[in-house]
Length: 145
Image 1: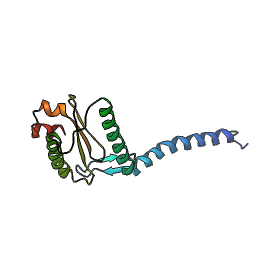
Image 2: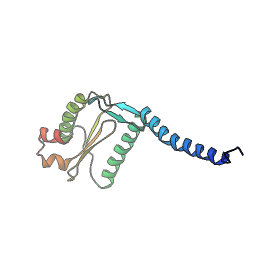
Image 3: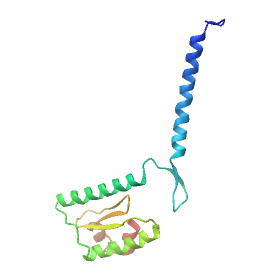
């Protein structure tokens, strides 16, 4: 021991202070290295997963939603169905406006459910109940999408 008599406790305090300072600094570095600027708004946001992982998650959730609809007895309308054509027409306009290079897919599920969703990567599902509610009005459906 040195003349102050507290060599070990001083070292312990320094170790605790180093650890306390290390954790917030690590979080800050992680946050700053995961910032990305949104293409349309220019807003900065933290992205915690890779684009590839995000697209994969979107593809999986899209497939699961379609499988679940079919298990419940709801048909997936074919691409040449008038409702599918309407949704694709609306969706193509929205996709072009986003300027995002995704393999966009637009699918209509024949179901009375009033709902629609878009998974990451441009996978869009619209339930025919939504189309019926709006009497297949393009502007109303576009506002929802």
